[in-house]
Each structure stands twice: as C-alpha cells, then as structure tokens.
Length: 401
Ligand code: NDP
Image 1 (tube, rainbow, N blue to C red):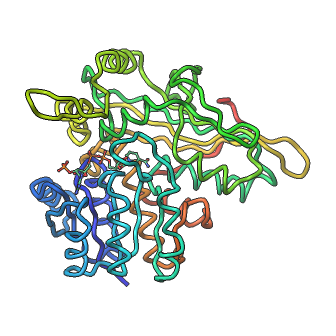
Image 2: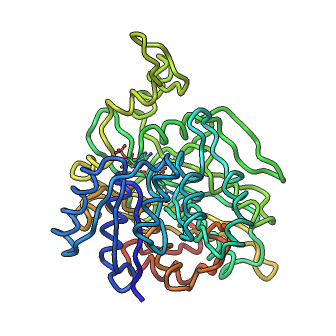
Image 3: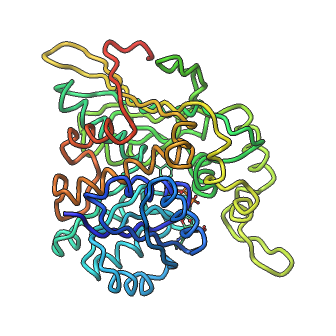
C-alpha cells in the first residue's frame, strides 16, 4: 500500500531523496518535503515534477522546534519521517515522532552543536520508548554509515564464519573544479575530518591525531589511485558492538592535497572553530560563517565529474580457512546528475535513505525499537541497491588490499 512520507531537509541529500521516492509511487504515495527554507523545497519540487513527472508537496518548518514539528506531523499524519536535515535535529525529530506515532529514519547520528562529538548513545537511549510505542527508528541509512553497515552484514552472512578485520574505504575520485568546497554540509564535514582519529583494536578504540596515517589505494575498475587517510567514522561504533569478533576495524577516506592544504590553513587561522567569537559586538561561530561563504553542496551537481568508490574489505575465516573479500559500489557524479540533478555524494546518501524507508514501509524491515542497519537481513537491501541506482560488486580474491 502506498504511504505518505515526510522528507525533512532540502539540501543536497534531501533533493536526491525526493527524486528517488518519487520514482517509487507504489511505496511513496504522497510525498511532503519540508525544511527551514521553504523556497529550497519548492525548487526541488519543481525539479521532481520536471525530471520524474510527479507532484510533491512542500512545507516550511524549523526542525529544532519540537512543537512546530509535532504540529506539522499531527496535521499531515505521515507514516514516517525521512530526516535528512542536520544531525543537530535528530533528537527533536525523534521526540516529535514519539509524540505523534510516526516512524523515523536518518542518515547521521546525533551531534550537539557546541561539541563536535557524534555518538549513538543519545539515540540508542530511545530504544525502549520507541519499542513501547510500537515505532521504529532506523539510524544511519546513508552510504557510510548505511550501505557500509549492510555490506558488513552481507559479508558476515554469506562469506565468513568469523570476521576479525574490517577496513571501510571511501574514495571520491570526482572533481568539482572549485578551489575548496565540501561534498556534503560543510559544517558537519569539517567537524568530522578535523576530529581526532579513532580505530578499533583488540577490544578498545585507540585515538591518534587526525590524518596522521595514510596510504595509497588503487580502486578497482580503473577508477584510479588515491591517497586514503584513516579517520573516525560513526559506523565503527555500532559495527564493533554488533560484530564482537572484530579485532580491528578502521575507516579510510580519500582527500586531495588541495583539500587538505586549504583545511590546514583554515584551521590555523581559526576558521574551523565551533565556539562563538565576538565580531562587531555580535557573537558568531567561525565554522558557521565559513559555511555561509563556501559553495552549497547542492550547487556542485553540474560541476562534479568522475567516480566515487566506496566499499568494505573484510578479513576472517570460513570453514577454518583464512579469507579476504571486498564488496564495493562505484557511482558516477555525471550519471547521478543526469538522473536527479545532484552529485554522487548526495546520490549515494539519498538512495539508501529511500531504500531504508521502502523496506520499513513494505514491512520487510519493520521492527519496533531503534536499530542500526546491520541488525537486519542485508539481502533485501542489497537487492534494492542493484535496482535503484547503486549496483555493487564483490572482489574475491581481493586485489586492492
Ligand atoms: P545540506 O547542508 O545540503 O542540507 C541540509 C538541509 O537541512 C538544508 O536544506 C537546511 O536548510 C536544512 N536544515 C538545517 N537546519 C534545519 C532546521 N533546524 N530545520 C529544518 N531544516 C533544517 O546538507 P546535506 O544534504 O549534504 O546533508 C544532509 C544530512 O545527510 C546531514 O545530516 C549529513 O551529515 C548527512 N550525510 C550522511 C551521509 C552518509 O553517507 N550517511 C553522507 C553525506 C551526508 P537551510 O537551507 O535553510 O539551511
């Protein structure tokens, strides 16, 4: 049965989610897109009409305001919220969902504004309340986190008895031609990449200074060779809990020298600070000001060329023998733009958000409580990736690592 859904957030990812939900009318019967700036929702709705031939409705709401959300949810009564605004709003939206009996999905775990520390603890604390209310919250249904969690669950189900080592590798081999821009929300992106690195080793997270360990990585299928840097990423927290056999788990992301040089300068001059400074008698947060002058991620669609390659390399044993298997997706920035008017970073996040919501609404992944993606059967998600624009491949034996 086709359901009504509320998409919250009209940025790069919100645009992709709106287009992809519109492509599946048998599941997403009535789509409402709401965000802080109504004009951005209307612009996306025009694009959806033009490219997908479907009308979607729009609204304006401040998702930091639980009461405003409750009013909107009571008025509209959607079956679920697909939250693709910012991680700062996770808890206000979960509160509003609880109050109105609405299912919930997001793509990034909660992070307080004044402390660049993201972790699942705040959201896992809602488990009992969601379960008691008969509601489901699916956390981190983007690519990483999201598909990387599903890839891990798939490898654990089909290729291993025990996985002991996990390396998640996220390469963006694309280029937007701008001197400096981030592919998703600049504030969130810069908070993430400037944080100290943490990786899992022998039962504990080990902290090292940001961006200190790096190595070249040659992607499969002629995507190219890129320098990848070890950093902390949120899926490590849930994966090491749900796969306790893991002895080592690391996350790696590619960065260009140009990006890192700009970032170093911005850090050195204090522009990445998240504490308020006084400017002309007014308090401003340097990183928020920086976001205001950087290109919006949603504006990079027509400019970005090249491929992304994101995947998971698992090592462990099956039937007593050592094994290593790599599962990955390659996505083209230009093809994403042709299909939904966005670059591949937004595309690779928005498609899994749609798939997570689809599996929930179809009842295949519907279970009261608060869950990470690796806690469900990966097979229906893997099938949907193949049919909704993010086909994956398996490399066995592994040549890339
Ligand atoms: P953008 O900055 O492009 O978009 C964010 C949108 O949220 C904007 O439309 C913004 O509105 C809106 N918004 C912000 N605050 C509020 C509020 N208080 N109330 C209502 N709307 C609000 O970000 P992206 O689209 O690039 O990223 C969206 C989310 O996806 C982020 O949480 C990001 O961390 C996550 N992400 C997850 C990935 C994954 O693989 N799991 C990868 C990439 C991103 P306005 O325009 O008015 O500011």
